[in-house]
Image 1: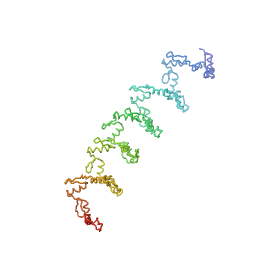
Image 2: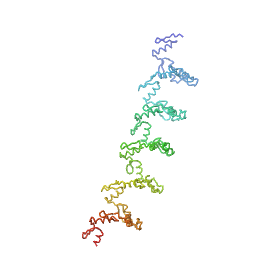
Image 3: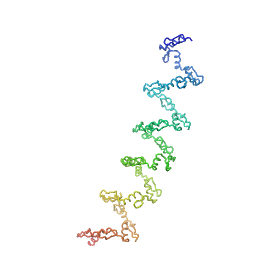
Image 4: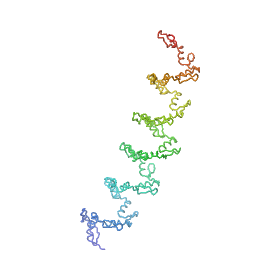
Length: 557
């Protein structure tokens, strides 16, 4: 065991002189053995020989178990531990054992906290060299791992492996509870929390817990108000990326979700799901108060306010409250005057969309509401409902003053003005007021001279339609008003009324001077001239005046 050859630098001894000579190259830096392929130099010849196998591809060391070959003996020795299970390198801190020394060295950094590999760009440090190499691709943008199916490139090999499962359809991670399979292990881990109920991610503000970190992150934006996802088209910001993606379909017009029953397309999956209930008839949302079921949850929520009488939506202008947000929005247009719904035919604008829809039927002539009794059609549902009362005889609108009932609400409103004396319609010419708009319209013809109702027989025109109707009886000879006492018939109702006073003896027109009563108003008017001395009828020949027209007529003879 004598080693007579001693290094003068470090006192290390060797059995052979050539070994000492090779060793001294460490101290002198001399590397006399040079690779002819790449000019790399080595201190020892065996090191050059091993290196040259990189260029030649020679792998002389073969595993007897699996025939895998290696360039170096130590690589074969390390490889054989896979078959033998030998792990000779043991951690002194935790007794964990490793097949390779390098694995132990890397593992020890867990205990020491050492991160010797430092990024020159951002000074972030890493435990493993491979981690640094992967990290540096963030700065360089290098994505060396490329999918052979679609040419998509990735920074990390594991990301490529995960991506390739999209093409192969492989889902190797299987839930032991329900056998659902997943492409990624992390998705299986998240899924398993459904079965365990585990919610490990807790909000530091309100202690609400979540099964997934992403859900916690999104939730925390409620507290911070952060909306990091911004639409490049309109700059609207969102707290969730999914909400931004859904919003962007407004600009792109994309509707990727298609109903298999009717091919109707939708921007959002939730809208498709809700729509499909039209075909299936499913109403999964049930009111606990009255068991009424609904297709959509929002409709149940709205309905439940009937029971709770909750009106959470309050107008900031007048404090009127509403059970539904849409009703508040519609109401606020009273204050703002906004009419966002515009007819493309005539540019008339409306506060409510349903009013625009009704209006457009004027242009289209559409009358979709048909009476089942007489097939008469109507453009609006309310008009059909009103019309059907003709057939049913229902008069649901009752006056609280006199109990008179009406078919239409508007008729009740007009009638009630008899009791209240309200006359809201005022003539701009003479300030005379009327209880009904139609009465004002008819009255205004006195000022304008308009006589729109024309007799087709003699072309005589009338201010009021009733006057035309009465006049036409001259041509037709119709006398529809018959006295029940003597069967005498009259063209006009007022003439029948006056005639009936012969039978009843009624004289409703009384002189305020002498209390004499009269059957007709004109008779009272003539009589009052006795008291006033008024003589309206003047002879054109001699200017003598008379109280009564008959007196003038006799005089002129």
